[in-house]
Every structure is written in C-alpha cells, then in structure tokens.
Amino acid sequence: MVLDLLLVGLGLVILLLAGDALVRGAVNLSLRLGIPALIVSLTIVAFGTSAPELLIAVQAALENAPGIAMGNVVGSNTANILLVLGVPAIISGLKTDECDTKRNYLFMIGASLLFFALCFVGQFTWQTGLILLAALAFVLWDAVHSARRHRAAGDASASDEDEEPEGADPSMPWWKIIGFLALGLIGLPLGADLLVESSIDIARVIGVSEAVIGLTLVAVGTSLPELATTVMAAMRRQADVALGNVIGSNMFNLLAIIGIASFVAPIPVPSEMLRFDLWVMLAASLALVPFVFLRWNMTKVWGFALTGLYVAYVLAVLF
Image 1 (cartoon, one colour):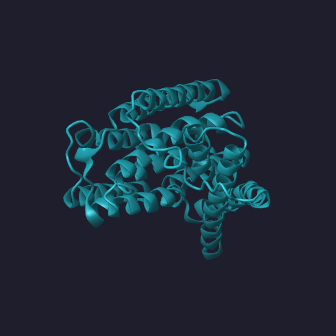
Image 2 (cartoon, rainbow, N blue to C red; image 1 turned 120 degrees about the horizontal axis):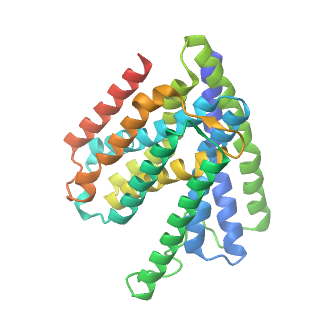
C-alpha cells in the first residue's frame, strides 16, 4: 500500500514534468515552423497541459480500468471549480466582477450538458467520442474566429511578442526542442502507466472501486497544475486568468480526453456516477453563475464555502 502510494506520487511527478516538457517543445517547434502564436495557444498548449489526464484515460482504457478514466474527468472538473477556485479565494479572494468570461462559460456548460446526456447512453464508444471531438472542434473554431474579430476591430493592442504562449523561447536551439519533445513523449506514457497500475492496486487493497480512486486521488493529483496556476493568478490579482484556466481545463477534460480515449476502447459509465457524481459535477459548474453573470466577487467566505463543499463531496465518495 505504501509502495503503491509512492508510485502514484512518482507517476504524477513524471506526468507533470513530461507534460511541461512536451508543451515547451511543441510550442517552440510550432513557432519555428511558422504556425501563428494564437493557434499554438488555443491548440498545442491547451492539449499539452491536458496531456497527463489524456494519457491516464488512454492507459486506463488499455488496462481495462475505465472507471479511472471516467473518475479522473468527472472528479477533475468538480475539483477544478470547488477546490482550484476555492483555495485561491481563501488566500486572497478573486475579483471576478471584472471578468468577462460569459461566452466561454456558456460553452463549458454546453459541453457539460452534452457529456452528461451522453453518459446516459451507458458507455462512450468511438461514435459518441466523435460527437465530443466535433464539439471541441467547434469551440476551437469559435475561439480562433473570435480572437481574429477582436484583433481586426482593434480590441487587442498587444504586440505579437506579448501574445506569445507560455514556454515560447525564440532563441531555443533545435537540440533543446527535440530534447523537450523526447522527454515529453517518453515520460507521459511512463508516468501514466505507473499511476494507473498503482491506483488499481490501491483500489483492490482498500476495497473501493476504480472509479472512486479516479474521482479522488487521481483527480486531485491531475488538478495540481491548475491549482498552482490559479493560486499564482489570484496573488497577482488576475482573476480572469484564474477563471479562464478552470473553464478551459474543464472543457478540454470533457470533450478531448474521453473523446480521444473512447477510440482506444469503449468506456462504460459506472452506475454510481449516474446517480451521484455527474450531478455534483453539473451542480458545481452551475455554481459559477453568480460570479460570471451577476459579477459577484469570489470572497474568502465563498472560498471557504467552495472548499468545504469539496471536502464534503470527497468524504461522501469515500465513505
């Protein structure tokens, strides 16, 4: 049990480091090939930061442990809202009254409702996965066209250098780009294999389902990058970055991860998720309505409330 927990931790560390390496390598390779920074930010960076969750879902499908794949997505989305926004709000509060995220938030709710409805089919196959990926393609298309419209209207005055995605380094040599790509491509499957295998063993030892491990241990672990980003954004008074990070991550979790993993193997939806966890995920998503549409600030009181709700949810899942 102790060894399995250590291996889970090691797997998470490898996944996070490999995901960061892959993003750095892919970003700089794309920019060297002349792909615009905007497209890189909306596609490569977004996919790269979701790579750990994606590899976990694919590995879980290959290992015949689909409960971990589903639990990771549903649990991560719940954690992203209640924990990833709750903790930064406790630390310094989030001035969400200044954020304009209505359009992206509506896309996230739409993705949540689509995912929710498809779950009641009983399992995700390549056909339902194709529906999710089609929705993702539409979201990306809309994001590209919206950005171009704003730029054409003169709403974005930042220079191309200011718009460079995170990890961009125009002077990075080719050998370093190739090195980052290699580390990412080798590390991601290695970390995913360690984490999934150890999570399955833990589930067997403590007598809980793989879905429960996915909803709690794996979901919290893969939400750590979002938590770190959001805490830093809150301390810098960048509430729009914090909220946008969570909304974007949740959309990719729902549309890309299960959408791609369903092409590897069918992913059945555990019955307990249909009864409880999916409803909690949807309720958590709708809990952002006052902050997005009514321009409420996410004060420390709200931070404690959201975090408390997440702790209560985890306890309900475990016990």
